[in-house]
Amino acid sequence: MRYLPKIQQLKVFQQVIRSGSIRGAARALGQSQPAVSRTIRELEQVLQTQLIIRSTHGMILTETGLAFSRRMQLILEELQRAAHEIQQIDQLKQGSVAIGCSSLLSLTVLPALVDAFRQSFSQSNVFIHEAQLSTLLPALREGRLDFAVGTVSPELPLDDVICEPLFSAEFCIISHKDNPLSRSSTFGELTEAKWILPKTDMGYYQQVQLEWSELYQHLITPAVHTDSFISGMTMVLETGYLVVVARAMVRSIWFQQQLAILPINNLPQAQYCVLYSQKSPLTNTARRFLDLLRDHCARYDW
Image (cartoon, rainbow, N blue to C red; front, side):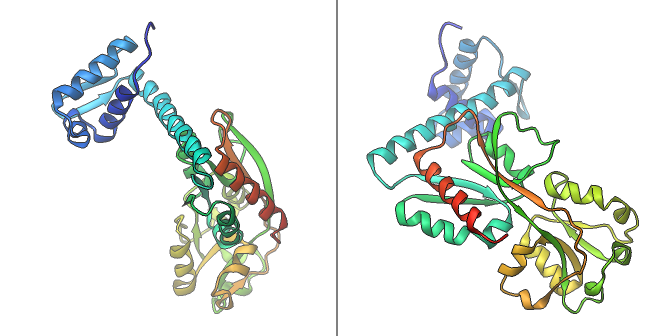
């Protein structure tokens, strides 16, 4: 390849993907359709390949177009990070950090962590995405997150990220305190229970499902799956569901007096890790936030 693509060509190609058509991209960019088409043709000429197939129903990416789009997204995100870091150096205490985590961090260390971070980076933007790690990994790989926190398992493909252990957490089964099953001490007593589980078959919850496979095979009612903490807790409090959560979460929520921890104590512990890209160095702002995260997790009673 004699020449490299221009940044403007990448941005136009990115918008075509987002819009799903040349027409939509032209409208979003404030350009004419011929201008957008010409830019795409020029990019294809530079790369010496066809990136998209046009039709009356829109467009689809070719195999090479799909491969290039993944790399291109990382390039544009990295350029954005570089620009932000330069701005942070020129304008001390500014910048941004984007993290992904489960509700466990949100209910425990995150409030004090963000407050401590603000004392040094008062003008920085903080973006928090709450979800299971299996959902957060694509955003981490695309550069939309600086790092993510969650439980890992052997089947997760992590060759392109750094995985650093943070803490171990004990888990338990909880119900409403008036639930007849709240005093159950064996799994055999829970076959008629209604369960709330996260929308993931990876990490800690995969380990739980493997160890409880016999219980799940005998459940009368299939589990409801959601990553929403509010939905899960509402169903526990109002409609008699059971849920598996970290003990630290129970101590932290404001309605803990309405909950009961079932006397079943042989749940496996969960190892939580922080993950960040091997390829993309953290900005000064993100490094400071990560240092504080390590410190707060090390001092917290999990």
